[in-house]
Length: 135
Image 1: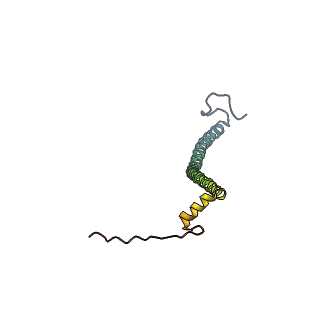
Image 2: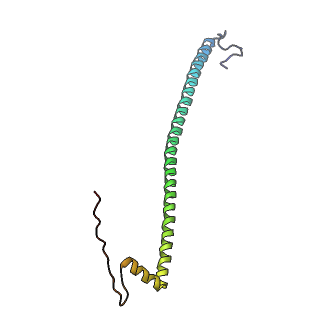
């Protein structure tokens, strides 16, 4: 056994390997210090990498969330426009049905909008004289 049963391992022992034991313990202590420093550095490095990844994911999430919000607003606008167009289609469908089933309404519309006349009717267009502009 290389180590003695002494309580303080840093003091030299009386046996021939005592100096060797002290050197080994000092090297282990130096290696342990380097290991602790390296371990601390690796922990800090992992923390920095983790924070960078979280920051990157947060930035991407923020952009995607903004795009999602914009798309939802656009969807609401499109739904309102669709509702208005569906109402217009329903109104025009009712008007088509009314014109198809009501000949009196169709005749009135032809007279008013298209200027058509019935049989044995004459259309008179009365033009008014232009009024002189006031000076």
